[in-house]
Image (cartoon, rainbow, N blue to C red):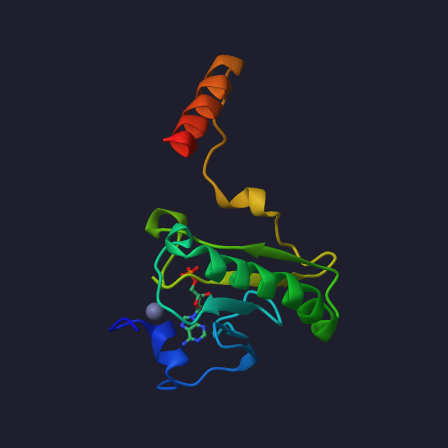
Length: 143
Ligand code: AMP
Ligand code: ZN
């Protein structure tokens, strides 16, 4: 548990949440400031800031819960679809420094946008630049 982490405080039961699912490792609860009815957050109970900090078993547990919950949340609020995503790091909009996946139910004609809308201006990358980026990522993975 991390001091001053609101999601750790929810896990500890120190502040209330509308919990919809709980296992030994995972908690899912309604977002307090929802983007849509049914907006749900899925978190590991253990405090980790970044998705890349999660041990493999925990990242699997988070994604398993997201996969299990997404269609059920959709059904519960009669949604047509959902966006699933994480803000990973402050520059990406992460405000609570405890890994959490958002499940945001979507409705035909709700005026929202696809997840492609989250980034800034699209870069105009040449084939050579794309090749270079792919090589850099591969080198990172091999390193
Ligand atoms: P992010 O910008 O990805 O860090 O999102 C944090 C989310 O946590 C926001 O959508 C908030 O509405 C939500 N949130 C903050 N405090 C609480 C809380 N006490 N209970 C439920 N959701 C919360
Ligand atoms: Zn925490």
